[in-house]
Length: 194
Image (cartoon, rainbow, N blue to C red; front, side, top):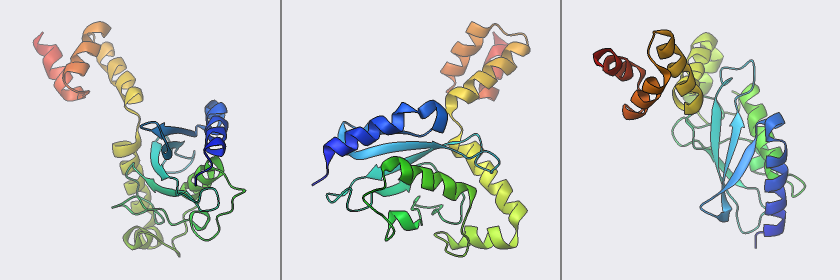
């Protein structure tokens, strides 16, 4: 049976210093056995600037069994499946210990983003690219981060600023972006016909 008191304590611990670590965990649909974790992409990596969502399922044996974690956000990384988001990380398998917490597990996943292990891959295609065409790997990982892991609110603010700099009123820019679902080009077309 899941130790719910411990899970609650871990959630508080994770969310207490979210401004420092950037790591956040919250229940999905008010269930303490199904959680959503978010980690920021580490600085100095192709994942920098991205916010990655991780689906966390707590088995009945938690904390004596490891949490089941997989990326909900698509990510290009040798140890993470580009298809399913499955993570190849020893502490999520045979190296788990009840002394570890959700936060330490998420910190380990974040560290994995900084230090890929292409010799023990989850995604062989990505691992081969990492080993043979490193620059292509970096470009692809950066592109996937831009496409899938950038937080929309940040993007919206940048789009608003760009369009305001073109001479359009901010309130009109915001409402137009909302109407077109954040598509900057459609918003510009609409604004030009106003």
